[in-house]
Image (cartoon, rainbow, N blue to C red; front, top):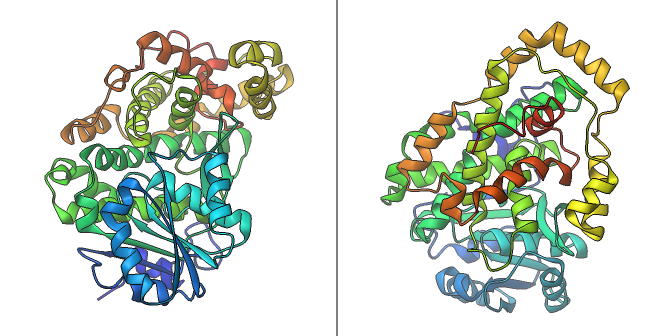
Length: 432
């Protein structure tokens, strides 16, 4: 029987659609099975990570899977149990706490999902150590990526991290995760089309690098996952496998490209803006729940711009003083440093307007080829009972409108938010 795309990728014999040698990834093993109970030690020992392992969990993930992993690995070598208190955050302070607790260890074993995985992969990178991860929820696509979402003094950043040597997903465990975490993974998966369109836009207009490889990896599993989103929430392990594979392959797409470009564009900028500026007393939403909502806004914005004629750009309005006034001194300085890299001056605007006037039909055709209708994405989320509006996340409409207008200012990543803002089409766009 022919190998599927994941097996070929791990074996190093999957052709690169962008040309060159076969695609290569640093992860040595991925195990996705209905159950991994009893095979934990064999999976980890086979990676040869060292004799002294740090098993990192929090109070919830320890109960779900951490005790099982600790018990299995304890018989195979020396283990240090690091249990983070409460509901930890993926921030610089937590990373330093894990580094300190694992100082004498050869490698880290993460037992968890988004926060635990990001903290461990970044701590491992800081100390030059390997790590592996046992997933406890299908809530995000970072298990196989080489970047970590870490808040540094309140500014959410995507930082270089260590690739997992092994990624282990017990589908029975994943299917028993809280429903909101399963919906979160689905939400983190629906943004493929908006992220791809944004990344391709930056390539077509600004000649920034772009690759097809990440999206070739996802094609088969994405279609079947979207068709089965209702069954996913009913405990169907077959659809759960599709979600686990989609999240895994999405992470590998980021690894292949050396950054989060294929999976994190305008929709993630909006989400990061909210995380940075929302009052702490607001209800806390899972990352993927947020991405589902922000993806719908980006999909509507992309549709709106692609339906019309060539946008007519003007020089970017935000300057250092306006960004600092909006975000505050410290955060504003960091945002301005990012925004400068894509800010359009008069000379650049003139060149881009000429390109858009002469080549809009071709540009639009290439972008339309990769997008999915907003109504289709909304139906996928609704079938799973996932949030589709900012109000369902506890975000007031006025605040969300501000997020749509200012999210582009936090990072040097050119998206349809920039195209809309610099052409005067963002302020009045009805995309919520």
